[in-house]
Image (cartoon, rainbow, N blue to C red; front, side, top):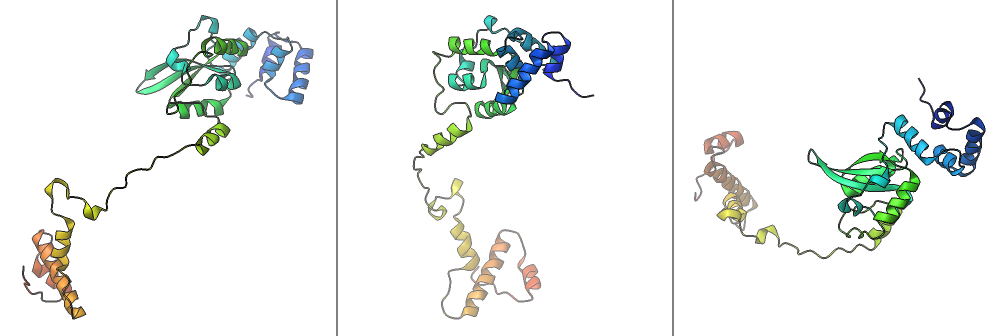
Length: 248
């Protein structure tokens, strides 16, 4: 069964007339926007009626912002300009199962990109409540005009063009470069890897290349034997050669 549109529901409930809905649709086609907000702008519908209808249709609780006092730590998560542009108002921050939850008053519960951006930037889950657009604007002016702007390292709103501009001015301090691993002291007093390397390959003898290969094989045999990984006779059998005892 197809889901009814807001205009159809308002018409069925007698909240608007057919001519009013037609006029709102004409204006929407010309200038865009939500049909509910357009009906309110035309004076065909009250903001409270629109909010109550949307709350029922979308399953999002409605809130009267005249009875709400936003928490200061919630208000500090977003800038007033962002809230006014997207018609949102942070009300409270709580913890649920180890996750931070932001109770957010919104005028448009279908503005999913904005909510996803807030969740990403503020590292929280958004819990929406519906409020009228004019109530949100008034609450922003009342509660956020004197609110401190978020610290640069703290949560801020994600408005993609502005974020890109911020990164243009971002400076990274030079970090200390660690010395090469070969120059670091071995951890917890363990032998330096060079000891095993020289034990494995021996100090490279000059002269005959074949002698250097034999020296490395002998070193490998001694290392495996010393670490209990392989007996000498097992390695001799695998290689098909007889290894001397060297200077082990």
